[in-house]
Length: 192
Image (cartoon, rainbow, N blue to C red):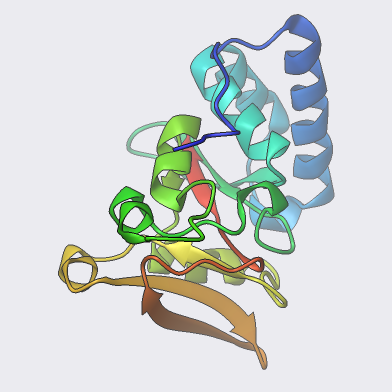
């Protein structure tokens, strides 16, 4: 299986780190409604202390996810980032759901699958609940759709779940896990 998104090193150069921090800060300040009551200085300090998480955020950014802080977990002290791009991230589209689905395709296999890509990036696919929480912060996937974590019982029967927003409503759908479309990708979450 080809994986065009894999990087051999999980370390960012000083220039990459600085560019990423600038992009995250600008996005954070532009979208304060996503993280009311949180301060960039606190997020920045946490990011500086977790270089492995910076690499995952860089991968989210590099593939078009536009990650941003959407919450803070008081119990764990972690900031929660979601992909906040208006549409499903461009660098993660045309993928089937998981490796099993990819392997089941006899012809016209996609280059990759959502579950393996997320794992390689160090992030998790959004759950349906997280996807709906994201949609409370804005309007996302008005033209695209995004795979979401699928319960094991549904997946065992060959299905997988995805969501989008149409007609001012967030919809949850099902499809064969081996399916893939140019307008379907996946959104991820990361705790820092």
